[in-house]
Amino acid sequence: MRKAASIWRDLGLTAAILGLSFLAGLWLQHMALDEQVNTTVVFGVFLISMVTQGYFWGVAAAFIGTLMINYAFTFPYFQLDFIIPTNLYSAIVMIVISVLTSTLTTKVKHQEAVKAESRLERMRANLMRAVSHDLRTPLTTIYGSATALLDEGENMTDDQRRTILKGIKADAEWLTRMVENLLSVTRIDAGQLQIQKVPTVLEELIDESVRKFKSRYPDQELELRLPEELVLIPMDPILICQVIINLLENGVQHARGMTRLSLEARVAGDEALFQVTDDGCGIPPEDLERIFTGQHHRQEPTADGRKRNFGIGLSVCATIIAAHQGRIWAETPKGGGARFCFTLGLEEQSHEQ
Image (cartoon, rainbow, N blue to C red; front, side, top):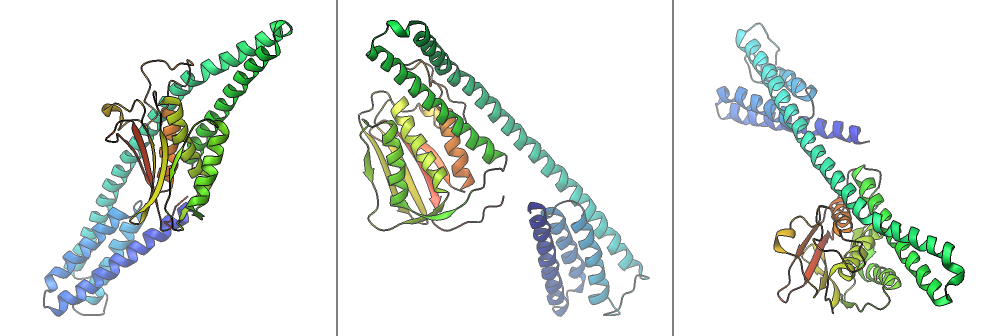
């Protein structure tokens, strides 16, 4: 499907540029600027070679441009005549230009693809390092707790066993969410996860996100600020719900000293703006730019000895929002703490898979 779309795109661009070149040639001929016609057509061939894929369209445009000049703009008009040396020279020049331009453009695109793949590999390496840090301790805790229950369970009180089982359950839930996040990132990067945008009522999205968040953190107070009017946003509601929960969960787990957590959503121009704000320890200014790359690590351990890296959940958020053609960033509010923001377009945009 993607290849067919690319072919139709290149065909449309070639036809449009050649058509404009032909119309420009007619206008120049009408203005008695016949000597500029060849330059205009050559420039059109050059543009086609730059904006299309491979060599075919540029070379084809060179042949068509040659026929165009020979037939419509060279005396005798409306006749093909390649005996005249000037016409033959123009054809050779345009073909050479198209081949050289296509070669240069192909090399540039290849270099850009190599750079993009290199960045993707670095991101994968960062995620793997982060995963190794984040998974080791809870797995060890689960193993140790299960071993304690098997070896000493008969000598424990019911409260002791319940406490250990609650710890195992909490660690297992956290590991499950971690795996869900990683699967979302890898499937989007690999093009396997289709972004199915449907018009979603903002209030229903927030209600579902808050419900799931409260099921995990029933004691956490959350302030909500939503618009009074009905707002419809094209999105994949399951993935955006995951983004909101990740951002809220990030505040609970990592905003030391937090006393207030809020979620705000409002319309800002042709976008919907979402903001998750806490009054905790904040984010160092030097980390604001790289916090969504999966490379950000806490320098000091947390109280429970795990979840030291909170870049994985945030990199998931960045990947999902990018797949929705939105924006995501972090900032420091005037009163301190941290604020995570992301936007979604209110108008449906094409998403090529």
